Length: 91
Image (cartoon, one colour):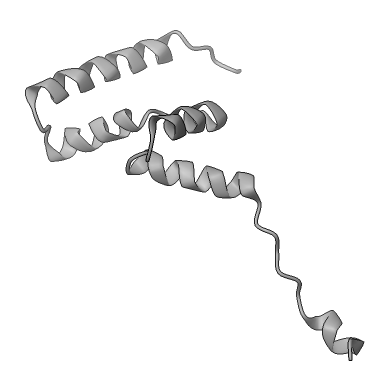
C-alpha cells in the first residue's frame, strides 16, 4: 500500500532544538526569564541584551515604578553607552 501515495505525503519536519531555544530566549528577553540560570545561558549563548535593559526602555516610555528603578536604569544606560563608545568598528 506504500505506492505513489506515500511518496506524496511530506514527512514531519524535526524541530531544531537550537532554534526553538533561541525563540524561547528571545521571548523571555522581552517579557521575563523564568530563572536566573535561563537568563545567564540565553545571554551567553545568543548574545542577547539584558532583560533589564528592555524593561528600562519600556519604563522610559510608560513611566518608572520608583525613583530607585529610574536611577538603576540611568546607570544601566550609561554603562551600555560607555560599552558602545569603547567598542570597535568592523569597517
